[in-house]
Length: 424
Image (cartoon, rainbow, N blue to C red; front, top):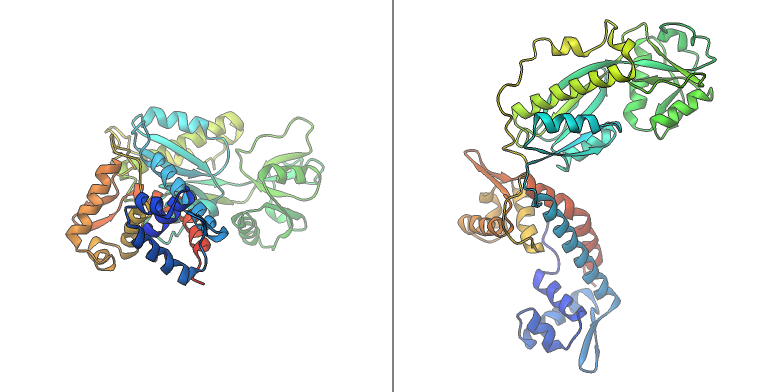
């Protein structure tokens, strides 16, 4: 990312003008002489047009100047919010996990027992969105599903663990010709209209499953949620694939759930950042996700648990018990002390390091020596009480806390750049 077209001192000077006062007062507030402040403003207005206006002894910002200052204020607020996230008062290592579906309270409670030294931060997202969050480093791990035989291929370094292969069932209108059968053959549904949820992977799943059965499905409806899919099926608008863990329809409801006679499944996968999530923690997460799946099945559909294709027992066979404490060393950890203040110049350092990939390559870009840059980052870490760089035998890279700060600030930074523009 490039440096701002207006430097940090210029922005601070404009903020001082916005806060009210005379030109001399604005200069003093930013540590400049009045002559130096005047020259800075003149250079800015030569490039960007009128940013200030004189009113006697007072100076004030024009509409464009106010827009820039407002955007700067929003960026600083975003940075402060990001710091609160990475340096919270609890000082527990935090795992940010994206999951699909809506009922994860039991999993969070279970993980609190098996990883008591870790704070779990869950967000729900469809599989496509979850991978996007992982790519942007907004989460440390993602629990996703993929159509059978499809791979999860993040563009950045990741560890992908198989969790289970979930057999698929079918959701039929109560009056459907196959509704009375104990199990349904996919080929018998070739002439039906099909319904899929909005995420692209849901339609991909329907097409792949039906193609394996020898026909191309007619996708008549795309729904915004699983609940809407069930409603459309209940109104006789078509048939749909469903999880065996989907809530059972009420007695006398408009639809039924039936297993399929042919093997069709979706693959549940856990994607983790190996630089953040240790191998032991990844194994623990996989084991507790499997346990959670079985617990949900026992509660929602006990008949499914007794079926030979129920996935979890075979997956758990040979699973070595986790007897040693699970390491949370790589997770974002808030440290005691520090002042939760960071400015755009600090963020520019982190942006250049992230783009360059190392301190050695970042230093020339910033026109400083590598030792000087290392000292600046160390002082920033000491001031914030947050680890921003991971230093090891393979070099230096940004820590999860630094990536999160960059992600939090990115949208606000784009607004500020748009307000500044490219010049008059």
